[in-house]
Structure formats: C-alpha cells, structure tokens
Length: 167
Image (cartoon, rainbow, N blue to C red; front, side, top):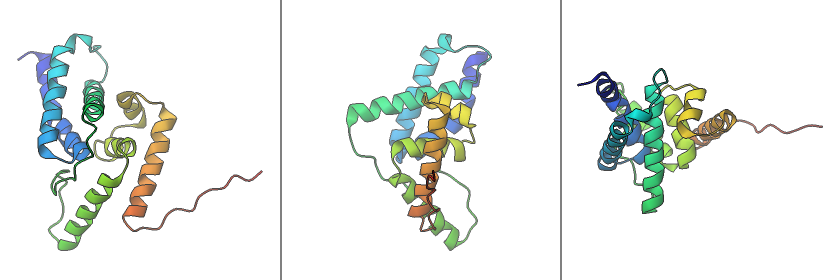
C-alpha cells in the first residue's frame, strides 16, 4: 500500500464518526464514507503535498454529502442511538443526556450541525472548518455560535441574553 493510500485509510474512523453524526443513519453514513474514499483515491493527484489531508478528506465528504442531499431532496433521517459513538459513564442519567443531545443535533439545521460537529466532535480549528466547508471564517464563528445557542435552548438550558446595539 502506498504512503498516500495508507494516509487516506488512517482517516476512515474520523470520517465514519462524522458521517454518522451528519446523516444520522449507519447505512447512509457508510455509503457516504465509501463515496468519499472512492473520490479521494481517484482524485489523489489533486491533493497538494504539505497541505492538511484530513481537511481535504472532510471537504470531499462535505461536498459529497451536499450533492447527495440536493439529489435526493429527502428529509433528514432520525439518528440512531449510537450514531456518535461517544463513550459515556454507565449511568442512566448520562444516557438520557446523550439521547437528548443526539435528538437536539438532529433538529439543528445542517449548516449549524456541520460546524458544531467539526469543531466539537472532530476538534478542528475554525480555520480548518472554514477550509473544509468552503465558507469564510466569520461565517464559521457565526454558525457555531448560533448552533451552540440553539443546542442550549433545545437541551432545556437558559438562552444567553441577546446583545443589543446601543448608539
């Protein structure tokens, strides 16, 4: 296996985790990862040496996902219970909180969910997220803020007070 193929293969666990969180369905997530890997291997000559392979792969996945959503125009599927595969302490209360979080993530608009998952789950920097999604850095920060606020509201927490512009 070439070095490039090995590097691509190392990204599979992260791609699967993000795809499951993004689609909410194991089968669709596996299909999305497979399509992403296929495109990456076919287009590996387009990757610039020295650039971030993970960001490049997530960009491919993002574009593939958007194309699939546009093509299908089907509503988002409800996430299965272990879609995020986040380790949890063995208490019922933690399990309930995790289920609430998964439900709240499903209710977020896709553009907010993508940013929240890339920053929170994949621990990407704002700059990496902007590169992956092909949006300005300010848009990443705005969507992250709005996504977190919406999650806070959906989870039953207090909404942060809205700032008003004072002249």
